[in-house]
Structure formats: structure tokens, C-alpha cells
Length: 195
Picture (cartoon, rainbow, N blue to C red):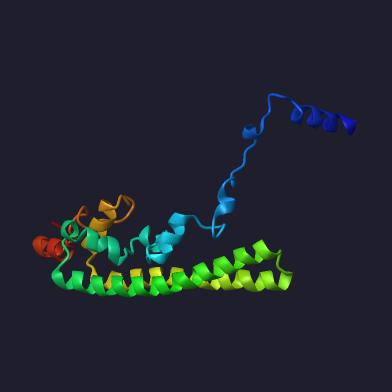
């Protein structure tokens, strides 16, 4: 009975209809990467201080970041003072993200190189993985911290407009909600950035 599955597997693998191209190899071609876990596009985005998706917990939950806000300034109705403040936050974020990204890339390269030369000892592996994790956390913090600094510069209606323009439809939009009782409608709409 135990020979039957083995015989079937041998017959199946020896079948002329099955070629090397039929075998699913999701990592084929990735072995030539400088850092196996990161694509060239990933590395370029990190080196440029771009988001790399690290701020999605903020972005998708109503806490926008400075870069996309500046891109949508006219549609959102940002003032010159807001744009100026957002520009400072964006520039600080980019500077911090580039520095943290360099540390993250170095840590990932060290981890990769250890396996190229290796494999590393369990102790060395623990240190390398920890270093890469800490570096990634610093990089992520640089992006998320910028989102936190951005929120106080905006009115609720501007955040709602941003979410709407970015396609995040689940966000509350005070511009679409009824004006609360006791509030002047024009003042409410102006305060909330409604056009």
C-alpha cells in the first residue's frame, strides 16, 4: 500500500508531458537580485524616501500624509499656510525616510550576504534579522509620524475631500452630512472645507 503513492509519483514525474516549464517556480529569476527580498523598484523607492506602502494604516484610516495632500492641494482647498506647513513636514519625512531607508537597505544586504557566504550561525541570524527589523521599523515610523504631524493642519472637510479624491469611500464626509442643528450652514461648510 505504501508503494502505490510512490509509484504514482515516479510515473507522474517521469511523464514526457511534464516539462521544467510546467513546474511552478515563483522565485525563478530573483536569484540575481542584489538583495533577494527586494526588487530594483523597491530599492529605488526606499532610496528616494518614498512611501513603499509603509503608511497605509494611517492613509487608509483618515490620516493623510503630506505628499499626496500637496499633490491635491487645489482640489482639497488647501491654503498657502497649509501648503507651507505640509511642505516642511514632507521634506522632513523624506530626509528621515532616506536616512532610515539606507539603514534598512544595509541591514537587508547584510542578511542577504550572510546567506550568500553562509549560511550564518543561529546567533548571527538572530542579530541580522533583528537589525533588519529595527531598521524597517524606523523607516516605517518616519512615514507614519509625518501622517500624524499632518492631521492637525487640516480641517475635517479637507480630510474628507482627500479621502474621496483618493477613492477611500468609507470615510465620513462632513460636506455630505446634514449641518448639525444650531450651526450656521455657510460657516459650517467653510469651517469644514466644503466647496
